[in-house]
Image (cartoon, rainbow, N blue to C red; front, side, top):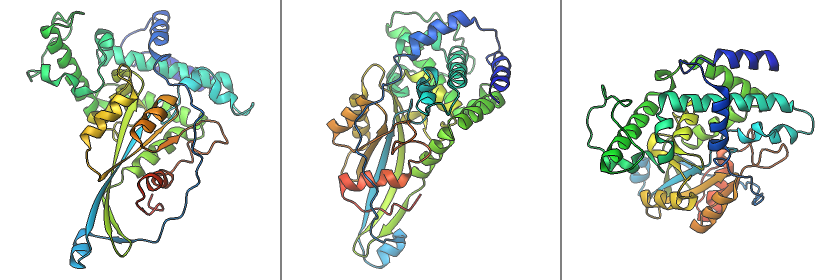
Length: 358
């Protein structure tokens, strides 16, 4: 399927941003932007097997109150890395994903898929998300410049003619804040408001097939992790569980948001739950998240492939689940389930939650 479908996607998607792209210039920007955005895989892994939890009974808060059993509220916060965890890109580009299958996968086919993603992501960033203008002014999250934003209506604002410059004085900080506000608005409106969705759906499906369902199974795991609030009882204590997914990516913020759109993750990660550790590091992002969710009712688990998030999780004394794309590794996609992650919560925090709830 490979060569013909990739050729079709390559030519069909060249006009996705509404203009022709100079491939040589684009490749230079890709090298500068992407190589430092992806963490190297770490060797640290817990490799713990999931243990069966005690039988529990599902209850409502009304039932708990009527029986006089105290209701405890608990929020499980899943903190996810993106590259080589929820999506595969660097390992496609350098062929390491395919080579890990010892000849069972076509290495060149994977590299071509990766190059398609890399080129098109930057095209969308530049054409629709001001990336050429704001690349050197990366922010750790979309609200970082909110104090510089006076809130004016941007419907008819001329972003190409407002004189935005490279010296960040108060005036340019305000103009930069306008651009990040517009990025947030476009993100909330979804991919269909920006580009034609069909070519991206075809590329997504092509990639998902090549990676044996990595993208779709990761997305499914995220959705199950986030499934609504529910209460369980062990006969003595009722506990109401809420679940939150947060993304902390090592890449710059704007390309990471665009990846969320293109890899169909924007309905899972709201714009205020996407952080870029590109300039500040994972540990600082984790500290900000802890400040957002203070109190003993909040429990955290980090999922990623790199040493940085592993060490940051250890510093915060949070559990860490190591992702590794190699075929025989314990935590990868398809395979990793919400039950596996809830086991990590129970090991560190000691609260029993029914792991069969998926």
